Image (cartoon, rainbow, N blue to C red; front, side, top):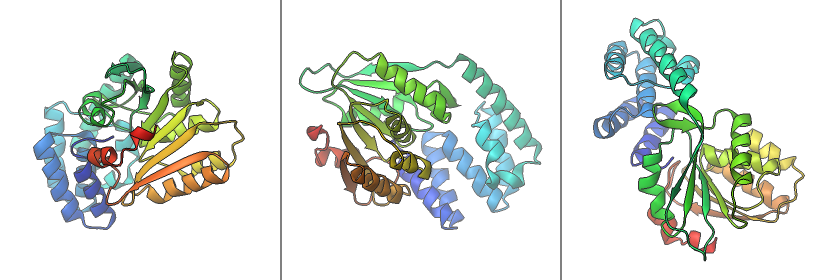
Length: 296
């Protein structure tokens, strides 16, 4: 979930949620000009064009995407109400059809994967890491490895496709099955289970089913009320430590703090690290400066 453009994308989402579509459009265009047609950024830009009645700009962007063979998540395209004013456009229909064909083809060939990174250190526990929604392996390698540089990391890639070379955990049932399968086949007795954003939420759900026995490290969990209720109603035997890292400007921050409160009241060992000024993204240097990993 932590990519070089994530801070900007978070700013764009925040601006749009406050009705400042002009700022959101400016920021998203800057992302696309610098990093290319990142799928989540493009989707947001189409939403901005739809909500502000800029159909000509939308048509131009849709044509560019099709010409460059860039496809978006078709499920989001179909279900996002913010795109409603674009649905009758031939260009939108064409891209949606292309996206469905590409998505179905990619999903047919997708397989769960585990990538090993870093060196094996006998003195510290290895990390099994579950990525966020729309994540890409190379972006993790560039960023999270900076945080985990003294650990061996097993990057667990979902079999569920989000877009081209990007994956997600949208199907909760399948995701929890994969978490259980990965941990059942891991050989280490002592390990750290970690996830970011959607990946962290899936770990919470797996935790409530008694699947996770080891320590948990959750980065900016995309917490839902459903997940909190599952913890509140759980009756599991767990003696590990749970660490939550969140930013006070993250839209998920209130829910993360509620989750921590519920966990504490249930008697679990829970620690929270709040990084001031951080939104729904990770600041590696702040994580390293606080030496959070030294404690785990």
